Image 1 (cartoon, rainbow, N blue to C red):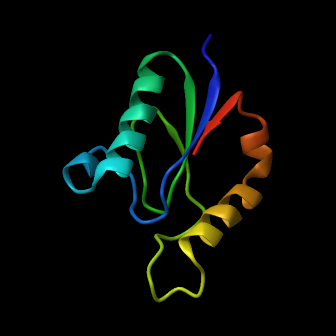
Image 2: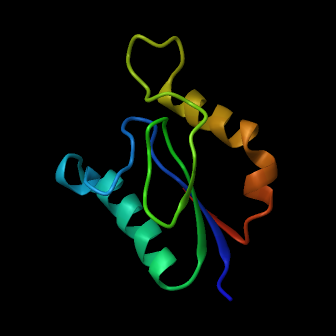
Length: 97
């Protein structure tokens, strides 16, 4: 049995099977990491913006994609995501941000 691993995805874009065709380095790295950890037999939980989905991976999406019109910084949005999901993150063996 593998580990239970939490992965925090950047708040700027949703993560999907095709996101590697649309986004840059950090988003691609995070997506690939989640998929490869899943393929290695780990239970992966990705915390990502609403509308995100990856096959075989639990996605927790309880915040919108960040945009400049919001009255919150990307850092504060990610911080709120951690606070709001602390019980789930605490249950993980490892968390990647």
